Image (cartoon, rainbow, N blue to C red):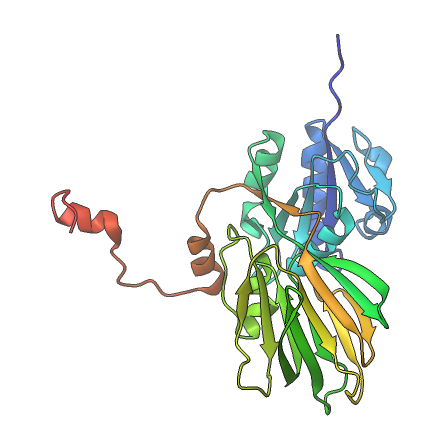
Length: 316
């Protein structure tokens, strides 16, 4: 008889927070009590004061590298959106679904809240969850036509001025054709998932995550045409830092990885080859998530079902 492969879950936590450490230990105990192997990064195991051999099955302690999520059915991420973006970086290319438990502020990427810990643990044990695919972007940086850096982003890639007192001079391109030149504080190239992050703060549109598209939003641009743009997912966006620009710029990807941009640098953004998979425990529409996360007022809403009831089942 074939012995089934053991279940394995990668656990990532913002161990600088007391509540995150408490929740992480609770997950370790509950999951191992049900025969699920928990994998921890060595630095986080130390922060949690975890003795691997005191659990049955024994906790696996690994280094933070590209193989950390190998053979894991999902990664449980305890913290805020920043911790989930770090998890996306660690698991990039592995297709490991990420289940976020929000201990931060808005927590748009997270599926569960602090009060949902017990039910979240049960959902994992019972495999009562689904995963949805989220579009990413691949980002390439060129200097003198030479590729000098390649990375990815789940939320956004932003080209920003490096010095507060100087404006960034850029020309933007879409699908191989120049679109406009801007003197600006920067340019955000975002995914639908990132539309509620930096893109939102910069005045860009909120795009439902089921929409496949790329977004480009100028930041404080001094130009007649400087509006947020939504383009096809097959488009290639490019930002060139003009050679005559005084001072340098900097590329930020998901607020985590940076590349210095001297005058003349070129940044290309295209749909990512490796999407990120986010775990969903509930089937609530994205509209409900917006209302809950932003605390939006919906007072006075009656809805179609209420209108039908008041009209005796008839439309109109």
